[in-house]
Length: 196
Image (cartoon, rainbow, N blue to C red; front, side, top):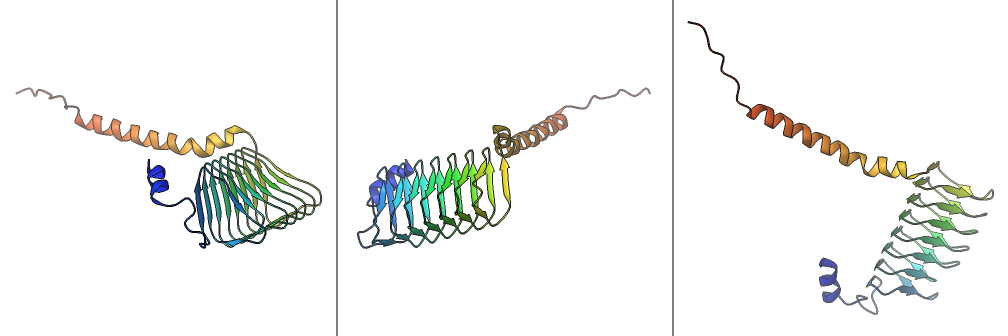
């Protein structure tokens, strides 16, 4: 309801001359000669051929950085993939929830690469400057790929359950303990008759 209200009150792209774009249900396409700021897309995908000076965020959509395109900020995708094309550059971190991160030949991610419930695939000549972490997936790199930080793969759904479900189980245990203590203290204590 909030997203619908926001969509009705704010135009689909804030203004033609504006550097920031937000879309609901319509893909954002940045041409090779365009320079923009922040990009946010709800239920749609972002395609970049030009330059993005800020961050890119998609909810239920993909991010495709075309060959030789540049993104200065971070790239985040919820329920979608991120693909960094040949010779493309991402200056910040890349984070994928429920999708894959693919860095093609000579592509570069300056920061960390993280994937939850998906894989990280790094081609020959590609570079990731920071740590690479795949939880519920794998980090698959070709021999000529450069990884600047630590590489961690926690394959299998058990890791996802452990990371996302375990805190709720601990919280449920604490709530159950509090309820038990409250009920225990509310019980009437038996009166012991004394002999006179």
